[in-house]
Length: 133
Image 1 (cartoon, rainbow, N blue to C red):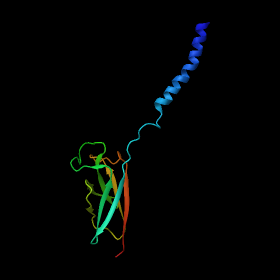
Image 2 (cartoon, rainbow, N blue to C red):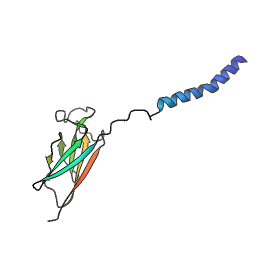
Image 3 (tube, rainbow, N blue to C red):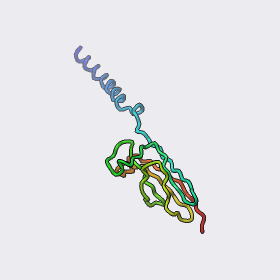
Image 4 (cartoon, one colour):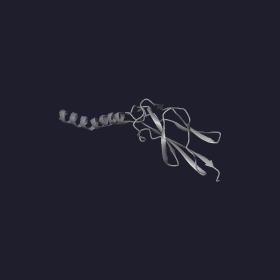
């Protein structure tokens, strides 16, 4: 009888202890979150020509461009009006191609060395409005 009572009491309390242990083990509130990189599109005009620069905390790597993914490193894809223009691999401004009259959307997207935009999932846009001719 004592053995049965002990087993019964133990089987009733064991799930409580196990559940508490599982709750602690699966809690995500204290888990470190992946770094969310910042990206800003900086547009300037010089003598009627427009430049774009990427301001970001991602390490821009010209040396590893097109290579294997290295966490925290990559480049920026530059789009003008939805068309991929090319990469930004350093902090120097690039001249934009001739823009059309009206609104022109300049979009920057963080990418891994191997061109994957989904890993960092960060983009930034700016609009350059040119008067109709």
